[in-house]
Image (cartoon, rainbow, N blue to C red; front, side, top):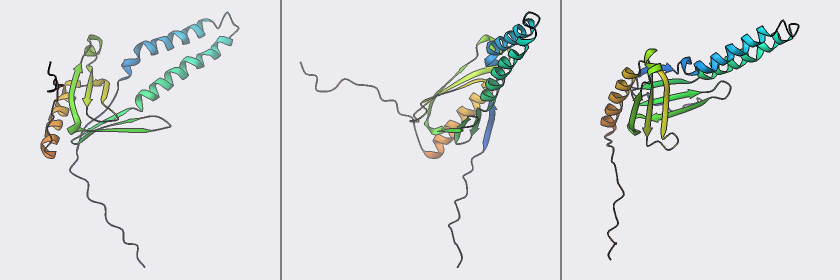
Length: 175
């Protein structure tokens, strides 16, 4: 007896357009605070008989956890969707179909512009993720253009158009 299972359909022509992470620069002040804590622990060693040297573990752990959390957030922009994977031990995958993206806003605060970084905020009609921010990503202008082109292509491919509906006064308002 052979086990005949249906062969899954071939994946569509989805192509990866961009892959990235949030830059660690968004935590500059947090890392600076960790350095100050470590320096204080080392500076206190002569006054505590070396006991404060053990306290250097605290800023090292704080730094490591923050770095891992930031690094474990991965963005993948494909020709059909934006995927966001988060988490170290517990993983979460969020996907936004590109034809659902309504609007996107690119911000480049001065401190991020100096570093070649920027923020990209998306507004979508997705039920679970109506707003998504990609913070401190490199080449944000290029990513925004890739997203814009991919959104239009996906809408054309699916024959989907965005419709804005405003609240109109009801017709039964006779005085």
